Image (cartoon, rainbow over the protein chains, first blue to last red):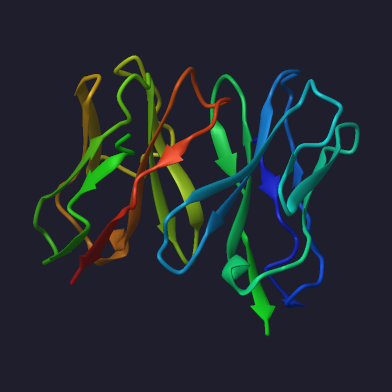
Length: 112
Length: 114
């Protein structure tokens, strides 16, 4: 199966600092989409940011931005000015015409 | 706008009983997904429907699991008979146009089988 790998099971960051979560993926498709979802303790899955593979420009959404390296199949998430409410599980996902696969997640803790 | 609606939110049942989880996707969405989340296995895709037709059910763990989508606004995931190892959070999600588009999740159904 084509997989999504998040190599950091847990991370922590001080409030107001910047943190980067890593993700690599595997796909044989030429057209696909990449996502970061956030899952707070409530277990609700919330879309954080979305990147279309055919776009070279990295997506940004307020304090959240990605570093998309297509050749390396890497899709990292940068959170700037971390806030206590950013504490959650973060899932990287890859979607194409056939399916949507998620990584195992990174548990991020923002410390006051 | 209403999001993806799942029921029940929580269910506790005894081993051997039948469990039915229900989902109403976002109106207008033509793709529907059932995921299962456990500590051990993370978030697993069980089955994916497009235009009410099952496209990929390779993630369905065994014959005890079945899913249906009789119309565009309703889907069920059934487990019969249920076992303790089925205890998990089951998410329904929907999207417009297929898995490459943004998937919107319901709040999940927390299943405990004792």
